Image 1: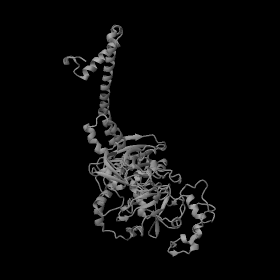
Image 2 (image 1 turned 180 degrees about the vertical axis):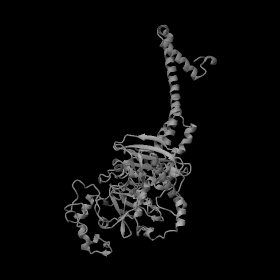
Image 3 (image 1 turned 90 degrees about the horizontal axis):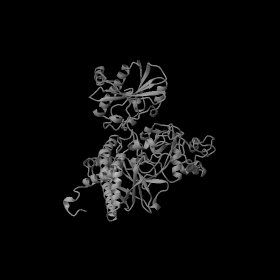
Length: 620
């Protein structure tokens, strides 16, 4: 308040320093008390002085607090964001970055990190004017974040697998993820991304079904991914599997006694069955018409909301006729299921190994809002293949990888884990989608062996020099009851790479241990971290260790964190795939080399265990 400029405070820092000195004097005791009392005895200056002190203290606090937040943002939060990104925790990094942006919006490090953890997207709905919400795929049901009302431009979203919810009065709510192509654009590209979500009037929504948009589509499932793309029109598909309660209506309506629902020819073992012969195949435990696990024409008590199981393909098509729907083709089923999203859907689906569950119990949602297409019950599809019918999705008692594997069984098969869901086509599906789906299988029994001289050349490709392992024990996990887990790295037999091995040693047995070297199923091609690898994740491996044997689990080339662009377990006529086979063989060899270097492992008794993909490559 000084009139002369040179007598005023020259900076906020100078003001802050004097305020701190004043605070210290006031707190120092008698001298400060006297000073204050002397001031208070002069009423004409007491009140203005007190007010001035309060104003100055508040001003100092206002100045110091933002500085503390800026310091926190730069010195603590930004390094933490980098650590989260390194651990592939982009959503947590994104949430922290938005907090940092409040205090240092133009920080050069933050500006550089934004494109790595997030994307700016435009969002449109048809029609516009819809409320758009988003949350991480694995988040709780009540954690939606409101993005705004469409159309939206320049909305920043994290590069993580998200669920989207779109709502507009008079229209059905859309709950979905992105398509495969959109997800890849969000994850890998920095080009402008525009999302469009179509909405359907409430009166046009098919009850209990979700809408799936059409377009050119290629199968994503292992075994069928090589087939050409086909055209799909928009269609509807059941949100959940057909339940016992729903199927009971068919049974009670005389579905098994009305030939008009059974339009497909009954062919078994090359012979066409009569109507009565076929109906005799479809009896319950008590001889009544119905699924194989029912009794007296009824489902087990309190299981009305469970998927109907133990039904054949013929029974599924008859029920579809009864409700004026269709079994989905393999193409329509795969598009709705999103088998490409195995890493997200699979772990949240019923592959529990403990039994079938009521529909919708598990939260593994497909790209367009379906549930239980992964796990729970396997699901019949329309298409034939090798005189069988496709049944997809895997079941509660199968490995998670079966969600993305093709399978075909006899149309008369009525296993306890066989169920189905139905589709409703807006227009007739293209012929390319409804016909038999087969591919050429190589019959090695008819192949002619090459001359010995050529075979020696082939074999030499798999030979490597026994160079030093330079093995390093990276970590030991002794928390499991029956085994100890060691993580070891060593020199690979090619390039300058390091090979990671996980060694599981039994706790309740004495060495030397017989050793089993494991080769996993093809799902590991799509995994990106082996950090939490457990014997419980692999069928029968825990039993091997409990029996007193050691297990070595190598992290083979192209699997887990060693991913390198190989996307399919199926052989291709290319040097890229051939080179991988050679590298897998050498990784296996180095695992055996390491087993021979450990005194507690019996070098004379080493076995190979291959599961699925590993089983197929074992004899090679």
